[in-house]
Image 1 (tube, rainbow, N blue to C red):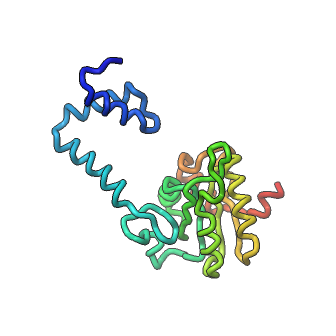
Image 2: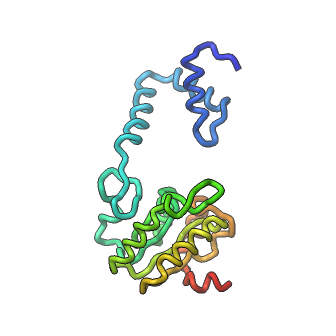
Image 3: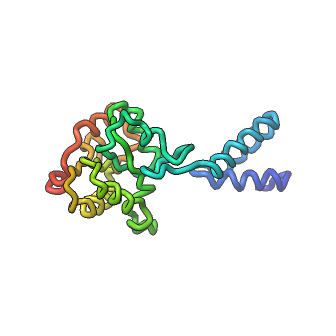
Length: 205
């Protein structure tokens, strides 16, 4: 496709790098920006720059936040002895939307996936072990996607935490095999958290 402007083409090229955005959609978005008041585009660009430059990660759970500690970890009303292990921020948001979980989180930043070049050392697993070793945690809930990669990560974490005297549980299979946690409806996800089972029992099935 020939563009009437190199500036437009550059914008389309950048927008097309976003997940799920093809070149036609990128062109539509770029033209939409041109039709809007310049202040709209400036505010849009500023929000993205500030996000990239100023966003922080909680020093305890690695959730995205604006301060050194996220609002969940800083909340004294949460049960800090109960930790839910998730893949990323999207799962934290999904579980929080259920209103069923009153503990805290640990964000791994991904799951073990050799095909994608992601190994245990690329994830926040060691920091999870350190949290458990502190002696304040009584239960760890493994709430990863019910995929082969998710189950592999669950088992790896289970092996790393097994020397400690804590309960290790996994969300109930109300979430279908192969499903991503972030796409589960709130009722199903909430029940999966409440009806969690011992990880030990799950690997015997």
